[in-house]
Amino acid sequence: MSIVNTEDTPAVLVIFQFDKELCKTFNNSVVRQKSVMKSYGNGQFVGFAEEVVCLDGDWKRNTTVGFLHFDSAMAAQRWLISDPIVRQHDWLDDAEIWIVPLCTEIRLWNYLQLSLFNSINEDNFKNQYLPKFEESVSKFGGVPFISSTPYIEVPRGLKEIDYLIITEWPDEDSSLKWNRSQL
Image (tube, rainbow, N blue to C red; front, side, top):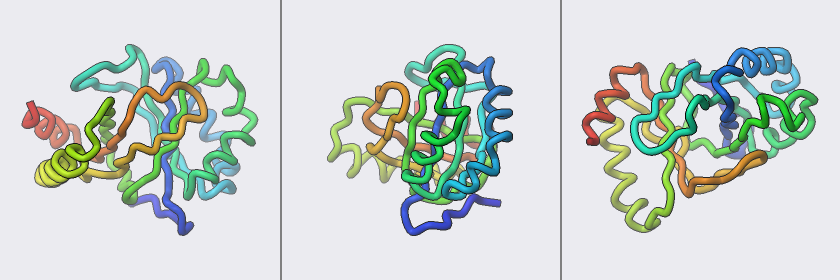
């Protein structure tokens, strides 16, 4: 099963970063607003992580992520400003919210890997790193570019990264094997 975009604009993933103790609150809020989300650009719940594994670099301790899919950035923005629960400044203790364009459909596998980059040399990154990244992730059974973008809209929180890649994995083992191969 996969989530399919119903508009001509790029579909987006809305990424919520919040305290991991609030996973049930996030889930319950999204379930309650399911029909409202659906009316705003086919908004759909993708999931959340009860645990985030930081493989390299820094990740805010006790922070997790939740994901929603919308058919366009405009639909996601309209939902964010109109939803009575989400627009409250203290919802999920002021969760950070990012909106990123998708490059391909989400397959609803259980493992999403976020690779966050700062201060990149754009030419080297696009011409050398990304092609090698795509080839190696594919070789290990992953989908390399669910999202691959410097365009990160931040309706709430701080933009602390210059580039984001979201990789999708069919299982934890494939992800771990690929990550170990990169050391």
